[in-house]
Every structure is written in structure tokens, then in C-alpha cells.
Length: 420
Image (cartoon, rainbow, N blue to C red):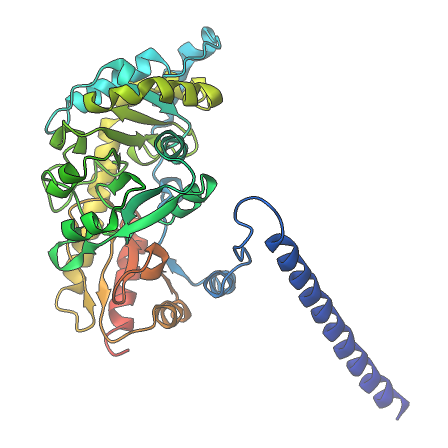
């Protein structure tokens, strides 16, 4: 009797302790939320706690049965730039190491970048002083947002896009005004919508080509851009990854009369996100911006000397590796499009480029319910709403994924949605 009473008491006491702990945790979270929302600075109005998707992902990973089709990290997918080339390229740096800060960046690195653009299709002729090296394309965006706009101004950005711009815009207290992409026309820029989005405080247009995540490539001049006459920031980090088009033309070559500021870097191009190097290339029409951009870049001097030293050899010796990455992505995209062809609920459109597939899903209206349904069956994909206010229901699949994992994931996706 005493034994049972003690067990009952222990159970009751344990439940009470658990309730108290949960209550304390809830009070702490509430206090933290109130405190954060009254703090000065950026991001204070955001709920930064893990959302339901992330919590479900972590729980599923713990089971050890999850095919991940979301990764855009090449080093997590077995894609490593040849270490012997990196070692060879770095030897001269260690032997003659000197800190020689230059707000434009290492002249030899800038010369290699100019050569890269001259060899694109069509070629883009640049001068070494048109190039500014940065620590990343994200930093390059931040510098250009500061260069082109004042707090309260706005920038035009695609309504479907990688979730980066809003956080960078918040740093400068800028508004992002969305312009529509037309899915029925391969996610082309809706020119009437682009013009309608602009107002007197619009300072620049943001374009990603190939687009993330739809893969759309701007292959022809866009009349609405010429009509607006605004500076254009064009992100071309996926430029080598053509698929539905033969090549990805530099936007600056299509619009030589507009000030075009082109961004790229080694994270995607050479699968070196850990070495942190990006750049801004100004076309001739944008050269008047160079003196102020030089001062901005000189304020930070973030690009490290080693990565700058490596860049010429990355370009001269690394292109076979780049082509291997491109072939993997093309193989995976072709496999997915073949497997999903004529699927009753999945409409996968061949992308122009990039390394993502962004299929539309029929028969599901709730993307959260869809991704949780798939996660419960061991498949991790991203919902379309991660990329903005996307009409309809979509999923994002990364074709950078290791081929055997990608093939198994596509098969699981196909089978799970046959009769949802």
C-alpha cells in the first residue's frame, strides 16, 4: 500500500515539476519576446524561434530516415574543388605574403574576372577598375543598397525570390516592392507589372539570372528596364548552370546603355562558399558610381587576401571541375523531368538554368500540409512560400543533390503524390 502510494506521489510530483518547468519556459519566452520587441535595432519584430517546419525537420532527422532534396551547399553534396589546385595556387601567397589593401581588390584577380566576362556569350568588355572584390555576394548587395538608396526609398525585386533581400533591405530601412514573374511564360518578368511597381522613390531593380528558384534566364533585352532607366543589380551566381537555354548572357551586355551592376562570386561558381569571395562588376554606363563604391568598399575591406590570390588559378585551372558540377545538375534535372512527366499531380517545367526545379503541385492548397505530408514519408523539400508570395502550390528541389539521393527522392515524391 505504502509502495503504491509512494509511486502515485512520485508520479504526481513529477507531473507537477514538468508543469512548472513548462510554465517557466513559457514565461521566459514571453519575457524574451516582449523584451526583443521593445529593443532598438533591426529584426526586433521577427519571431526567431524555430518554426513548425524546422521542428518537424529536426525530429525527422533524429529517426535517420530522411531524403533531403533542399541542399544548395556543394560541400555537403560531395562537390569539393580539387584540393591540389588550391594548394598549388596558395603556395606563392604564403611565400610572399604581404597585406596590400586595395578598395578594388587584387589587380590580378580583377584581370581574371575581366577575362571571364570577355569570354561569355555575348562577351562583356570590362576594365579592371570596373571590378570591386567583396567578401560575398551578400556583402555586395549590402554595399549597393547603401550606394543607391536612402532610408525610405525602395527597390524593385521579384515576387518570387531567395529570402535574402528583405533582411538586407531592413538594414538600410528600404522598402522592397515586388514585381511579378509570369509562370505561364516560364517565369519571365511581367513588364507591365514591373512598370506598375515603380514610384518616385524607386532607386534600382533587382534581377537574378538564372533566377532562384525558378531557373528563368533573361535572354533578351527587357523593354521595361530601358523605360524605367534605373540602375539594375543583376545577380548571376548561377550563370554556368544553363539547361533549357544554350548559354546565360550577361545582362550588362543586353543593356549597355543602362547602369548595370553585376554580382557573382566563387561560392556557386567554384563550389567554394567557405573561402568567401564575391565581386561587383560595373558596366560602362555605371562607371559614374565607382568613386563612391570605392569609398564604401574601402570602409570594410572584407575580401581576404588569400582568396583573392587564388582567383586567377581558379579560373585558369578550375573550369573542368565547374563543368562536372554542371553535368551533375543537368543529369539530375533530366532524370526528374523524365520521372515526373505526365504525373497527375506534379507539373515540372524545364528551367532555363540554375540548379533548382520548382514544380507546381495540383490537388494541394496548403503547402505546409504538403511538406509535412512528405516529411512524414521521409522526404525533405521546401515549400514555395519560402520564396515569397508565390501563386499556387509549389515545391523547391535542388538538383545539386548527390545523384543517388536525388533519384531516390524523386521516386519517393512521385509515388507519394500519385494518390495524395
